[in-house]
Amino acid sequence: MIYGAILAGGSGTRMHISSLPKQFLPLDKKPIIIHTLEKMLTCSRFDAIYLGIHPSWMSHMTDLLEKYGLDREKVRLAPGGESRNDTIFNIIDEIIKDYGEIQDDDIIVTHDAVRPFVTLRILEDNIEAAIKFGACDTVVAATDTIVKSHDGVDISEIPDRKIMYQGQTPQSFNIKLLKELYSKLKVNEKAILTDACKICVMKGTPVKLVQGEISNMKITTVTDYKIAQVLVGGIKESD
Amino acid sequence: MINYIYQLVNPQFISVKYEDTDIDDSVLVRPRYMSICRADQRYYLGQRDLKAMSEKLPMALIHECCGEVLSDPTGTFAQGDRVVMIPNIPSVEQDGIYENYRSGSHFLSSGYDGFMREFVTMPPDRLVSVKGIPEQTAAICELLSVAVHAVSRLDKAAHQYRNTIGIWGDGSMAFVVACALKAKMPKTKIVVVGKNSRKLSRFSFVSETYLTYNIPQNLMFDHAFECVGGEGCYDAINDIIRHIKPQGTVGLLGVSENFVSIDTRQVLEKGITLIGNSRSGREEFLEAAKMMSSQKICRRLGSIIYVDEPVKSIEDIHRAFATDLNTPFKTVFEWRL
Image (tube, rainbow over all chains, first blue to last red; front, side):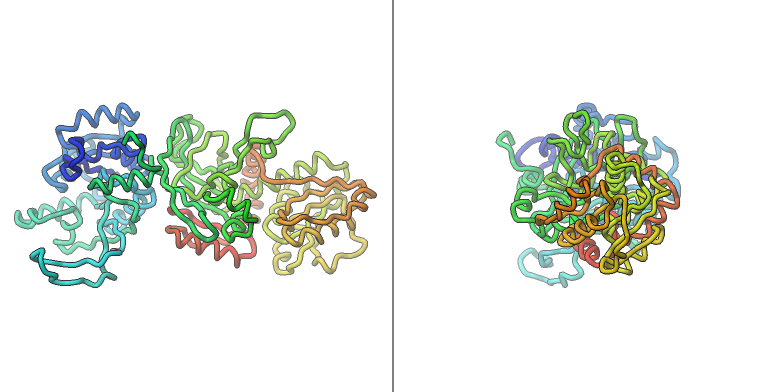
């Protein structure tokens, strides 16, 4: 089975413009998360799509699914966790509840709710790579020079830009592999995880690169939000 | 849902337009295989006149495409069905007027976005199933439908004699017209006249082929098709007029950017009928798809297709158009954007 996992456990504190978490902000005619869900639903290869939602926003999400006619059998809700990986594993627990034990070839495609510009091509490439290699990450080549600083004051290192990439999502995995690797991590290792691919990297399991798109941006700040609005036809007065 | 539309903004310059597309009651189709038409190439290279370019751009190119049905709320198609999309969007029905000539009809990839998009929404009557036909070949169904349209119109308008029909041109249009003619009028002797002997050698299923400078003086046709276009139109049309029998009918299919001088004295003296043909409608798409379901015809059409590498980026779109300039017939590619 191939499962989609839309990660929307956040509470939107970085926006500073609204008490509404950023995934629920409107983008043209619909909330951002609805655009993301619609695109994943369009990819016919998903057997089910789980939305990992902050518990406080569960009922709001349920209302949105009804409003936009997306309250389908294929769309399921799971409680968001403290961290990104907690949300992913909560979703895996829900998958087990709904579909029984994880099979050897089950795949999960995890994606940020706030990346509504994901394309069908990126989703299809992720599924193929996860089936073939077990784990993949969506990236774009870095255009800015990346500067490393350990103290936030002086430059410690300037890595060669040619080998630097910016990580996007989806990140996709063979579920059994992901669970197995996570279970092997020590508590202190789990504490420094920033994303799910790092689970594989820390355990020496190769993660294949899938070509992303610059436009597959993460809407995190007010500026990102304004750029996203312009991309889909401009900022309207009411916005 | 946000759709990526790959628009030609200026010659050889493609930019993405992001559009929140409403799905409503439309069938959602993912383009899978596309074929480049000479009309697309003219826009891409900026060979149309400046007025047309400024009026029609920006727009997504490509009107020959086979796609996969992603969802269909109308229940006409199942998820995963392979379909070809009809680029002609007709206006209100007018008795006796074909949908592709009605005023108010519009054409996707001529002033309206063609199929270079992430997904396309279409009403079910603008889709035709191509189940069982290889997608690469199904991609040129639109071209075959234009040939079917031209042959049908000639058949309706012409006198009853069908002994010999001439086709001027040795390109893709001439090839598919010959295919359609062979299928619809199997007893007719088909003669093809072209400029390139290597391209003419691909027309192995027709009765005779001649190079333009070597047409026997006594060779006569009941009817003919002109599939040359461009600067070659002048010679082709006047050759046809010279070699056609009295009251013959000529189907014109070649596009020319310039006016073409025609020997109207001979047209009048012989009582020749000239029929202009462009584009096609649902009826011809259905007939073309049916024709393609014959393995023999499908293989024949497959022989003029060059399948380029898949298109996964805007750079790949440029590559596909460059490849097309060096392929003798049709360039088809998998759309993976």
